[in-house]
Length: 173
Image 1 (spheres, helix red, strand yellow):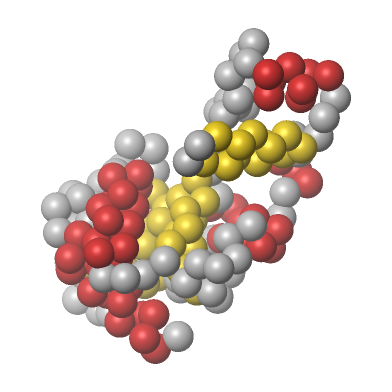
Image 2: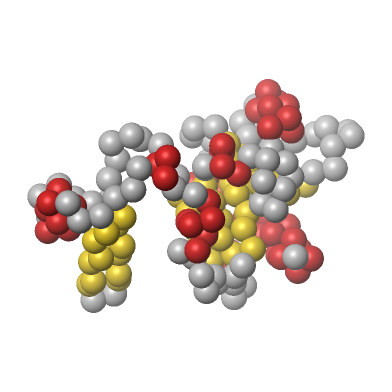
């Protein structure tokens, strides 16, 4: 299983970039998983008042709901107890896992290349100092740095080019 991370500032286009990339890579036959970090402290995927919510409120740490076309597992775990390794174990059977966010967990992990979605030159400069390794830059800002050997593809508008970069990396991996 290969792993890449897509990181960037709020409202930079990370989700749209991933959505377009998933669509294009799936068309090419890749089996994908996406891990999405939601930073809102009180966010829950569960619905207040529904049975799964009631089970969690009653004390269940893990709740599994089974519907006609979907199985959902809700685990009530404090963020501090979550490890990247455990999250990736939940994606077994996938060829590629794309992580959105989790900047602090992935920033310097050399085995996880990053696609950085940028909106400004300052974000490019910060990303170069913060994230290792960078697979590509994406987003509305065309990245032009003469000494920089990092690829650029705007995943918001040209998902095929960004998918080509990821495909090439997957073949090397």
